[in-house]
Structure formats: structure tokens, C-alpha cells
Image 1 (cartoon, rainbow, N blue to C red):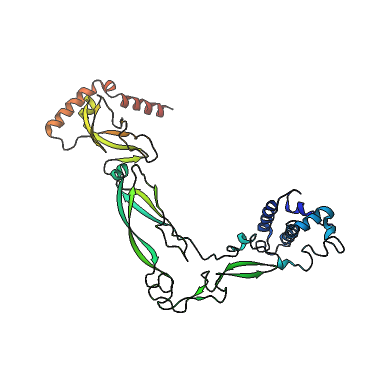
Image 2: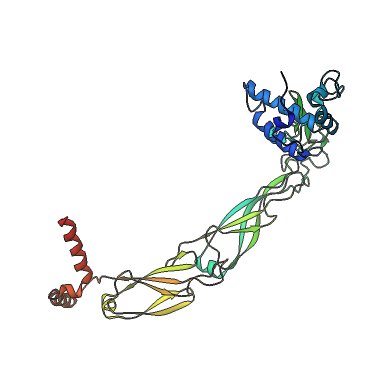
Length: 376
């Protein structure tokens, strides 16, 4: 039975570059590897075909021989001898650590993977609406991991030193044979540090780090809103084995305000007005973040009408202009009426009833809708 063309097996053109071959093989290896397809003979067969094709085409001499003579170049008596690996070679001798790193989580080739960047931290900071609008500077106190002062971060008891791990010879990684190839993994004994501590430091229990609190000053720019983040570079967790520290992200949360509600750069507020001002008109004072403003209420203003004050909102952190202030007027029903007030209101109601449709157009419109609804 004739073998499938190697280029066709990998799904590449005959002029494919070495990088194209590697990418194609990686894709097939990730898809058909036996560890990802247990008890699947077809997947294993596809994997072996791809492996054989890549081993041949990734070698310059073998690829040249294959391009000229095809599979016959590697058959007995052919151009390349009896094995696609060349004389005396074997599958176990081929280095797949760079290709299978994604599958098995292998570390850096020829180096230690124990050096790790510290974790990022998050701090939720509550501020007032006024602080968000104008900007502020505040101090925060956060828990963190710091280098142990007793052992200077070595993890070993003062006067002693850590010894080289005998399992990985101080490299922090070991090579493990898995089937027909080997991969590089973190040393299970020293956990990638490359060292063993016989006498741990009592202050940090051999960790080289201790828990502490630190106080930081945070500048809050004007215009921030809820869920905006401020990054403090290098103020996160301490790195491992000399790795860089992480970052601290201060996440802004706005406190509820007694008067205003924020909607992006706009502000909203409710302003109660009396029945007489709503009917006859007048002027009222409303609060803003910059002081007090006066607005004119026209006669016959209905409850819920919105008055907009341009530029009285907030200038967002990414905005070039201020938002607006939206004042929602609410006509307030009077309470705790005196007998005189009640008498005047009854007199007003009696007069109003004589021409109700004229003085209460919304009520008339609503009643007409109700009649139409029941008439259907």
C-alpha cells in the first residue's frame, strides 16, 4: 500500500517554509495526539503519519531526497537508508519539547521556569461624587507579601544556606520520558526553585516572604466613574525567585449621593415644587456641584417635566466637555392643611369643575382613552 504524500499529510504546499511546516505539524499534533484521544486508533494513526512527515521534511537533506525520489528515498536500498531518521537514529532521539510545550505545559528550553512575576492585586476604593468630579488624592492600606527581613528572602535559617536540588541538579526542571519522546517539566522536589532548604527560616517558614501591610498614596483624576481602574505599577505581589512584582489596580466605586444620580457625564436630580408655582410659574433654586443655580418655572408646568442646565454635569476623564444637569420637577401635594386652606381648595375645586375639560386636559384625554378601551 502506497504511503500518503508528506506535504499532503501536513496540508502544506511543496514550497512551504520551515516555519509553515512547524505550524502545520503543531496543529495536527494538538488535534490527534494520543493523550488527547485515548482509545482512538484512527487519531493515533493520523498522529504517527504527521510525525513521520514532519521529521522528514524538517530535515534539509531528507527533504531534498524526498522531493527528488519520494518515499523510495527511504526504503531499503534507497537514497536515505532504511529509516526516515537516518542511520542509527530513532524517534526517541528527536526533540519535540518546543512543539509539545503547549500540550504538556513544558517550561522554557534550557532555562529555569521558576522565576515568576508576582500576582496583580485589586483594591476597591469608594469615593464621593464630588471627589470623582474634581479629582482627589487619598491613601490606602493594603495587605501584601514582602521579602522576609530575617533571611533576606532566601527562605533559609540565618547562618545556613540552601543546597542544590539533587533531583534536577539546580536547573529547576527535569526531563520526563513519555512514550517515544521526552518533555521538560518543573522539578517535583524543589518545585522549580533548583534549591533545597534543610533548615527553613522560622519567620517565613522557608517561603522567603511574609505578609505585611503597606500604605500607598493614590491620585484620583477628575472625571473618574464607577469601575474605572487606576494602575499602580509594581505595587502588586512580590515576584518569585527574583521575578518582577505584579501591579496593583485600584478600582473606583462611587458612593450613593443624597441629591444627584450620575449617568455617564450627566447628572440627574429631583426638585419638588409647590402646586401654586407649578400652576402660576415662578423661580426656584436648584443645587449643582458648583453651587446654586436658578431656573424659571413656566406657568402650567406638569409634574415630571425635565429642565436641562447645560455644562452643569461632570467632565469625564475621556471627555473634552462637561455633561449636563437634568432637573426633574415633582409637583408636591400639600399636607397638614389648615381649615382655611381646605376651604380655599374646596372653593377652587368647585370653580374648576365648571370648566373641567379646559383646566384639566390630560384628565380629559385619559378618560377618552378609557372609554375607547371599553367600547372595543
